[in-house]
Image (cartoon, rainbow, N blue to C red; front, top):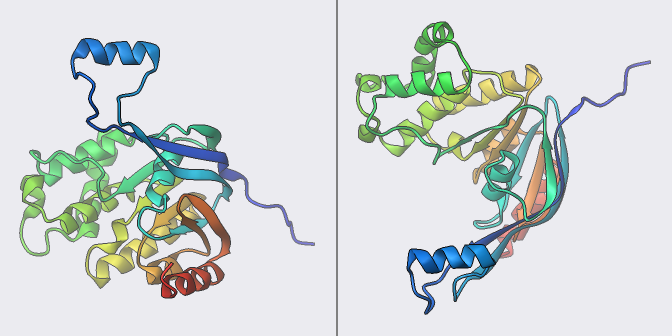
Length: 259
């Protein structure tokens, strides 16, 4: 009889709520003294409003899963990823992860005044690689990104890169290492068909290496080709969690009806 045990969980999200506080100009004075007083007394600026971005989301992700996230703009997808990555504290609820999740997004920080070469080295070192490992993997990272196909861009400052080139380099750096949990926010929507194919193949390799991948994308085709399971968030609420084909069918019907 085959072993029916499930793989161990890598991410557990329990009834998580995330609230942003947006400060208006109000009528209060803007001095440092008044700001310090508000912090000490936990008073908010006049005109402060709260945005409840994620509302009571619970889920369990396991080793070897690739989990897609879909939803209309402002539905809470990126906020949920940032919370799982530990970059946003939940207002209520808990997040448990195995190891340190790695968040890869189109807004991930690279140093614009440094060359792509230097950013590759710094990014790899930040992920825990040794200098020897950086030197060993550097050629493959550059080749994977494809940014040198039309010139020697890897030696040029990042500020000279297009947004697509920078996003491809970010993914290439992150994909050079096996992660317990890799969170990808729209990074695969850039690049030509060859880069997208290589990216999907690398995600499959990461899954086979016992990692868990979360993927946010507005391209439902990418979700279908990459993920077996999909979460649908709408207005911060987890509307559906299940097999990708079923979830996308419901989500696309919702979108056709105008939400």
